[in-house]
Amino acid sequence: MAIEFQGVTKRYPDGTVAVDDLSLTVEDGTITVFVGPSGCGKTTSLRMINRMVEPTGGKVLLDGKDVCDSDPALLRRGIGYVIQHAGLFPHRTVLDNVATVPLLTGWDKAKARKRAAELLETVGLPASMGKRYPAQLSGGQQQRVGVARALAADSPVLLMDEPFSAVDPIVREELQDELLRLQTQLGKTIVFVTHDIDEAVRLGDKVAVMRVGGKLAQYGTPSDVLRHPVDDFVASFVGKDRGYRGLSFLSANGVEVKDVAKIEIGSTVAGSEIWRIAVNADGQPRGWLPPNSTVDGELAESDLVAGGSLYVQGTPIRGALDAALSSPASLGVVVDDDHKVIGVVTARQVLDVIEGTPQSVDS
Image 1 (tube, one colour):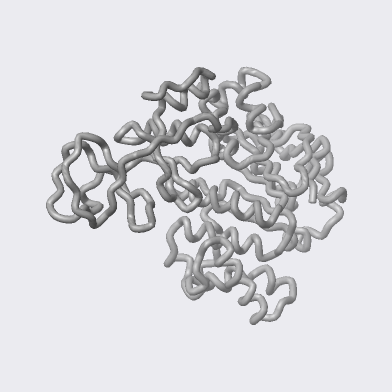
Image 2: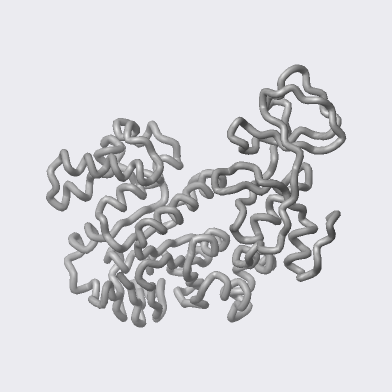
């Protein structure tokens, strides 16, 4: 279901213009991210889709129909909405929080709760968590519940207002991964608001960069915005390291994955002058054993040095460079989709591919 902004303006009684003549189309089944500094009108634009804010000019069309012609309550029940801090009802269990919209639309309690339990598993939470209350959950778990509740409406449209900004960076990346996984399954039309350009380029099929005063500065693919900013404002907002961010759209084909010395947790380890990657019984990395390390008895995780980020083979080249640069051994660990170690790459190898120069066998 497509969303279209046609010359949309929001002006408040004191003369403040929050959104100024916004025109763009959010294509069916895609993620469009509104990004920009505080006060640029991105949240106001989002909320005009479900009429939590009424436009003072122009039209917002949902599937070709003006949202202002719809009853606000009915409109909102048919649109998923996720906000920062999840906005869960503290006095209701997790299961009843997720079941809220189905109950409002007339489902009986048993059917609504069954659907809620299914959705908890969809967003990566065990159904047993449905008995808990929001205060008993971590921030990341609360946000997953918020996503499940928004999906309960089974609407083709999902609005997300800075949903991951209140959690720590590791959980935030997990939630971003989860959203992308869900989108491949569900194909929703998603409008996502963030102030973080990295989050915008990672999630968005299209990125709308807005400037203070509610003006649309640039609308295009993440690659277009990073590589071809239309003016100094956009160039400044996406940052001087936009070339590095642009690596998120380049293939890592050509980066040779090399063998690495592996040792298994729980094994007896002899001394060595090289870095070795420690793996569990499934072949997944657990950390690095530095050169000339002394291990008393069987190798334990406490003997290891944390190993930096991992590069999943087949994903963009930025991940390979991140893995190499963050590794204490200066060797980026390459894993398959099951996170089993395949081998390693060096930063020099990756840079040679980026620069288009041949790789040395010894690099």
